[in-house]
Image (tube, rainbow, N blue to C red):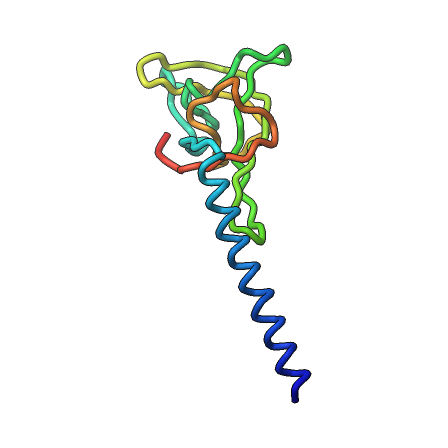
Length: 136
């Protein structure tokens, strides 16, 4: 009987420490992780032509020696909660509508994939971010 009591005490202490560590890590990450707006890859008409993959013009980064790219937001569940990772994905720019700011692309991303709405050279592949999904 005494052995069971000790097991319950140790287990409750372990769960308490785990809860505190989870709270602290989430609190620390909220302060250090950059917050970004994200949107989905959509289809669009540009100059009466239909494109099945289009993104905001601001989502595309051209400053790389390997060509244009966007950052896909990959959401993963972890023991500490959901985390958003960036995945650098190459794109080919097909056409841009200056008025609407939408750019048609060809890419390995699928329709509906979540990407960063405004790209920046401060991000790199596999960065952790806090992504808030918005409209394209």
